[in-house]
Every structure is written in structure tokens, then in C-alpha cells.
Amino acid sequence: MSIVKHIPNSITCMNLLSGAVACVMAYNQLYFYASLFIYLAAVFDFFDGMAARLLHVSSPIGKELDSLADDVSFGLAPGTILYSWLKGIVGSDLSNPLPYFAFIISAFSALRLAKFNLDTRQTCSFIGLPTPAMAILTASLIALFDAGHICGTYNMEWLRPAASNQWVVLAYVLIFSVLMVSELPMFSLKFKNLKWAGNEPKFILLGAAIVLLVIFHLAAIPLIMLLFILMSVVLFALGKSTNKPVEENNQQ
Image (cartoon, rainbow, N blue to C red; front, side):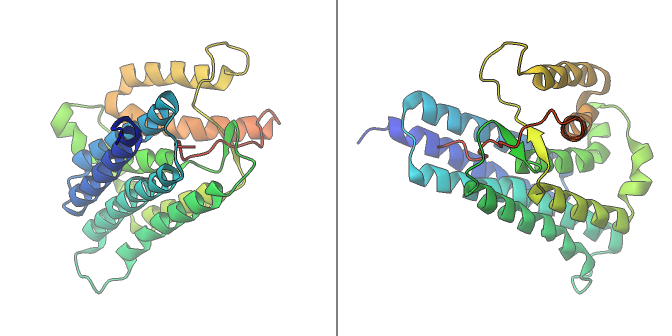
């Protein structure tokens, strides 16, 4: 039995394991470390598909496994982060139903993954907010309040009053849940070539990301994700976006 054909699925399993650890960290209110494991899951999610294509070992089971792993890492994990954060706001009384509404974002992540697995329009861009982008944005926003005393990142304490309001957090859950299943076209971050033509938004976002990282350090991550969303909305408004989204599952 060839070991090579199991490499992509093994990488996908590392994605799932990273997401599971992120859930544990989030439940224990270790938000900074939860965000690190979600970032790690995103790295594995990128490389499993690349490995499958390079090794020519794509399989139907790889596609299904990828969706399951993504739902844990980019659905359950951010939902657990928001649940734990809300529990810290309203108290740890398990009878209080408010924190459980955080898992709406997990349910919509699963819906997005299921819906777009069947979407035959998916070729070169996204429709709706990709689940990894939502998870990274969510994790990095909450992690900012832990990271200041861990890695000396840019101080974002001025955001804490808004982030500590349960209604603001619930509004975030609803808005980003809807964005994931919306028909809003969003450009893919994958490069098929390094030419400027056809890749303008990607190069602009990449350049802006480098500048933001230099200035704001860890605090740049949610800014980059928000810029990605804003650029997609602007391109859609200008009629320069495409209605052909790319598959989120890499092992095609």
C-alpha cells in the first residue's frame, strides 16, 4: 500500500486536530492560543489540497474529510470562542441561554460548506464569506485582548467596551452567519500565475497586508480580513467581480 496517497488526508486530519485543540483552548478562555491553532488549521487546510494536486492522489474521501475538518476548525472552533467570550460577559450560569447563540455561526458554517460543495458555479472566486476567513477574523479579534501581555502587539483595548457588549457580539454572529451563505461574490486569494493582469485585487491585498503587519503586528490580522471583505464588496458594487466561486474544499 502506497504511503503517498495518504499524505493529503493526513494533513487534513492535522487540520481537524488543530481545530479540536482550538476548541479546548477557547473553552478555557485561552483565546490567544485558540487563535494560533485556528491559524495552524488554516495552514493545513491550504496544504492538503496542494499536496493532493502535486501527488495526483485526489479522492472522494478527501473531499468529504476536508469538509468535516473545516467544519470543526472554522465552524465549531470560532463558535466555541464566541460562546466562551459571551459566557465571560454574562456569567457562567449554564441556564442562561445567551452564550449558546454563539453556535449559530457554527451551524451556518456547516450550511455554507454543504451548500457550496454542491455549487457547480465554483471555479475562480468565492460567493459568500469563506469559512476560514470568518474563523480567522473571529479568533484574531478576540485574541487581541489576550495578546497584549503575551507578545507586545499593538494595543486594541479601546475596542473592549464594544466587544464586551453581548448585543454587539450577537450582532456579529448574525451578520457573519448571513455573510457566509450570501450571494456576495468575493475574490479568491489563490494565484494561478504571478501576472498583474487578472490578479490586481490579490496583489493589492497582499501589499496592504504586509504594510498592516509591519505597523500593527498581530492586530493587523482582523484588519486584513476586514479589508478583504470590503474590497470584495467594492468590486461587486463596481461590477468587476465574478460570479464563479472557487471550491472551498481543496481535495478535488
